[in-house]
Image (cartoon, rainbow, N blue to C red):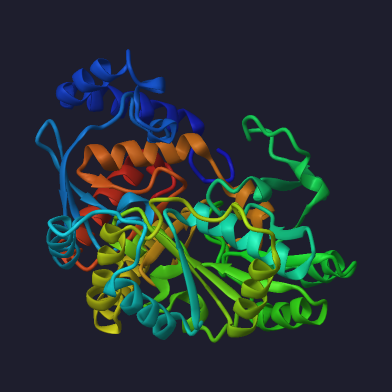
Amino acid sequence: MNHTGIHPDRVQALLAKEGAHYAQRNPQSQALAERAAPQLMFGVPLHWMNDWATPFALQVAQAQGALLTDVDGHTLVDFCLGDTGAMFGHSPPAVAQALADQARRGLTTMLPSEDAAVVGELLAQHFGLPKWQFAMTATDANRFVLRWLRAATGRRTLLVFNGCYHGTVDDVFVDLVGGRPVQRASLLGQVHELTTTTRVVEFNDLAGLEAALAPGDVACVLAEPVMTNIGMVLPQPGFWAQAQQLIGRHGSLLVLDETHTLSSGPGGYARAHGLSPDAVVVGKALGGGMPCAAYGFSAELAARAEATKHAAPPGHSGIGTTLTANLLSMAAMRATLTELMTHQVFAPMHALAEQLAAALRAIIAHHRLPWCVTQVGARVEWQFCPQPPRNCSQAEAALDAELEHALHLALLNRGVLITPFHNMMLVCPATTPEHVQRLLAAFDEVLVQLSSEVAS
């Protein structure tokens, strides 16, 4: 028995049984995976697609609403939803119609349309920041924001929290190991030492944050308002109020990456909890599944950024790509902001997520397992520790990759898909109480097999 309350032998036995069952029931997926192997590195379009617990990649036939159908004809209830990219469901009708209409009028021109003005107005209304720019992904948006803020402040140093998630921005891949900043070993092809311009502290550590800010050379703190990459880590009461004061006192700026915490509501976590960042990044779900992202600045920061650009020599700024803010993505964002990012849409999502979280806690308690469940809006996650972790180090200590794989694979074989990275689930507008019951029944069935020794 380990800290999870599950014996490793049971995990291995479940993995072997479920792996064989998966292979037996998915012959068409296996055939397509074998067909792709000679041409695609790692056999998939993106190597992360191998991070699922499956023996070979599940191949999708279609996805609609909260359901995903694979090429072998199985319909799964999808609580992964593209790891938040499809947070409003797969192919929402409003977005699909907007895309179809715009596709007939043009896809990309490197020029604005009426949608640009409308999307800017809607973003300002939703997030409370007046000035906006766009990107193709939240990774790009974070990268562009760092350029703007370093240029505007004349400071080079970035401060992040240990275990943070900001896409594949090189600067953020610095971890605390034994209390010392270390460049992440898994980062491929990195040629510059990141610790010279990136500082890292633990989330919820106000003393550590103040010490890192004290030299007065930090351009910005880039953070998720709730950490999501290592399993969810919630801010302690009062943390952000005091952190914002510290950041401002030392002349630094606060950038909140709401890519995952958009599940909190139509203005993200910051608007729902009264935070006042200098900049906000929004990606993934902003276009209803289309590749697009946006970043917003306060009026003061925008003025500084614009002045910096005007004062710079002519030439490429290193900010932006030709397909950024293309006509198709702007139409998708307009539809999402207008039809989906509303309190009327979020309220039932949050209510159903609360029911899911409560039921998961009840099942875990019934099996007497030392796990906890955390919820942020429509986002729910269980973790292999009795209390929600306060920082990355605690969250990382609770991880058990093999147990995660066994649970995820067993749920998939029972018609339920959750995110392959830790144990995250999203409720979308198309998710029904029946879908939630299907997840709960499968979860309970799997725990019976894993933990019958400790179940009542």
